[in-house]
Length: 143
Length: 115
Ligand SMILES: Nc1ncnc2c1ncn2[C@@H]1O[C@H](COP(=O)(O)OP(=O)(O)OP(=O)(O)O)[C@@H](O)[C@H]1O
Ligand SMILES: [Mg+2]
Image (cartoon, rainbow over all chains, first blue to last red; front, top):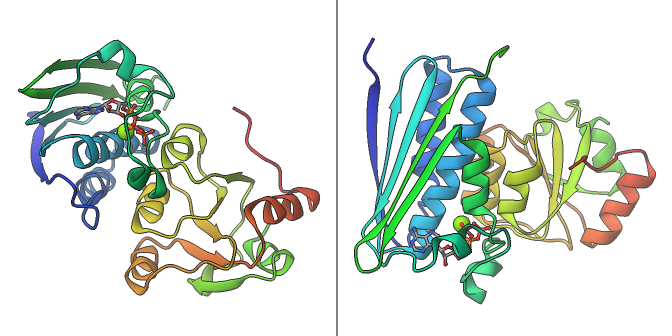
């Protein structure tokens, strides 16, 4: 069976719509009867990725490829890129402004949350070009 | 603990979804940092927060949380309440501070989560 694929456009700084893509993805997964804890992991990881694109990037896309046992998420943005990925991945590291913190973001937990939710996680970034995050999440044995 | 008890302990006002106040919560988590909520919280957990924007509702939706208590008498905008209704998320607001509200619930037996 071939995977179903959806792509969502994510606008920079659009806080009123931020989270809509992840919400749609979660609804799709519930509709296709995806296993609940997989759905939850995908929802959390895509939401963190979506918020990072809204907050830290110049805009981008989130794509999901859904097949019965696994969901692949690709979050891609158009810059500015991350200079030091190792530092960015550190729990507690954040460049979020006070304005962003007042909205409840900037704990510096997003990237590590994404990694924790994923069975496979990779991040690539180039200054001036953008950041691409690939996450693969599968149903765990016994679920 | 039933959500109706939470309401009574905190003398809270119900902003939406009173029809499901008999639902249960097993634990509570107090935070204004959404990524911390997403990292640690799971299932039938009550969220206490001082934030009232739509991202709080989104966070609850993603983490499968079904009750949010807003502290210090805060109340979100109509559209935020509407979003919660869509997701069947109960919203309460109490005049207590985050610390006081958490303490009251804890002392009545609603414990935190293990991380
Ligand atoms: N798509 C991105 N483009 C550019 N920089 C990014 C991007 N994603 C993350 N970063 C950088 O990496 C840092 C850490 O990201 P992470 O998601 O872990 O935390 P945060 O977004 O700052 O806070 P939180 O996710 O806890 O609300 C960010 O503060 C930012 O500097
Ligand atoms: Mg983040």
